Length: 329
Image (cartoon, rainbow, N blue to C red; front, side):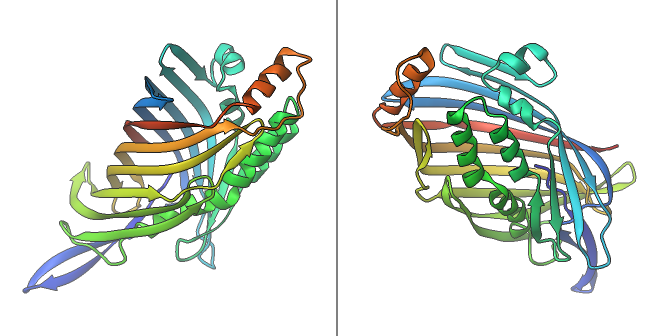
């Protein structure tokens, strides 16, 4: 999801010398933008004591339309998914998906990602930059439920909406403002970051760290501010999620990340962002021990087998990089 911030400048005097300070705000200028997000992960997945290397890359292309700031200070920002491509290789299994490729868009296990193309999520911000509400995300899960191929798929999408619906999206968008400095900064000054964000699937995610305004440089006549944030994120035990015939529980999540963001000082447009992460996650998976399926078909036999699976612990450890770039349309 695109996060754009506006910067304003204030001037103070220190020891008789003029010092320029910059105040970060969680707004973006009116206009249309194209953003590309590339996430590359290199992980080791351990299931029942067996390690499997896993490499994953996802490309997202989104279009952002930022509306005007209204008289009451509110602003609407619309994000539309235009294209999604994904590659994953875990052990001997390799899967590819590209919403622009008809072959993989219809046959890949990731084909449900294609349903997101054309999805528009509208976030409404108040005058202080807080997210009031998001629209479009719950509607997406409702559409998925309506178009589900069978009752089992319907239950999966209903569960996904309950655990990853509009409330979670609003919390995610709002977390960006919580990480902003509360005071104007001169180059080299730091600020502390500490936030708590409840996510049903993961439990309460605690984020601590610090940020620093590293530099402000002029590029082609435009002042560009560069900030760096170093964060540690930990989650408590999440709630058990049942998606018949499978249930899962996120037991632990530890993420360490360092991110560098460049943005225009005058407009606040994010030019680029690079975030490097280290991840250590443990989850428990198993069958729900119940299913309405009988063994009168191969599909029902597979559902019954999954429902009766014993619990097993799976750990995922690895590193990743997320690169985002933005340009005006």
